[in-house]
Image 1 (cartoon, rainbow, N blue to C red):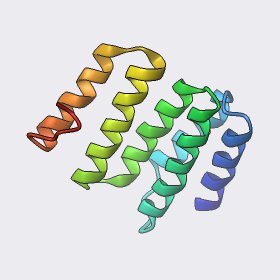
Image 2 (image 1 turned 60 degrees about the vertical axis):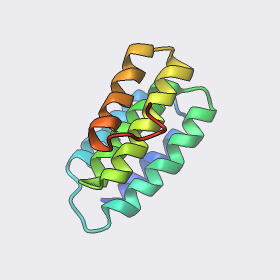
Image 3 (image 1 turned 180 degrees about the vertical axis):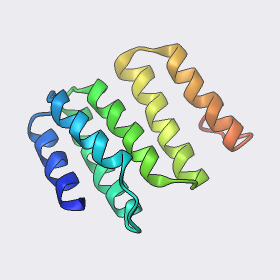
Image 4 (image 1 turned 45 degrees about the vertical axis):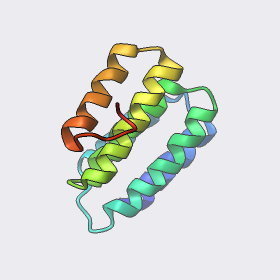
Length: 117
């Protein structure tokens, strides 16, 4: 399954606008329960950056959500992903309310977090 995920990520890097590929990837990630989920999360993270740089903010946002599912209960990783999602919403998608919600979630996870305040 990890090979399939890598294949879909490679396709998204080449064609970040391919929502059909993103949907197939989401199905795989939603069912991914192997011990190396954090390694797969790192692969997704690298793709997020490339897709975002290609101007496909909506696809990058969906990839961040998939990455969050793979990180499990790691509070620091979740806070980092929420921060990245908030920045993407604020800077690229221009959804200030969505960004604020992300920052509020960070403060619930990590009260007093300077990045979210």
